[in-house]
Amino acid sequence: MALKSTIYKADLQIADMDRHYHYYAMAITRSPSRAIPPKPTNG
Image (cartoon, rainbow, N blue to C red; front, side):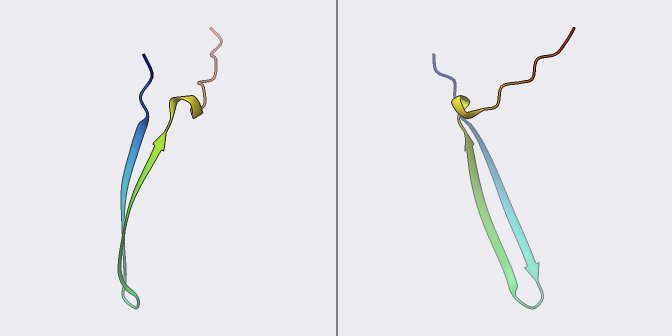
């Protein structure tokens, strides 16, 4: 069975009195094959 990707979604809203209002929607995916493995613990 393959591991699923993790999807992170974020909305960024910026209001500026001089330059009006900006809205950004972002989606970032992280594939299990690209994930950094956890560091081993001693003990």
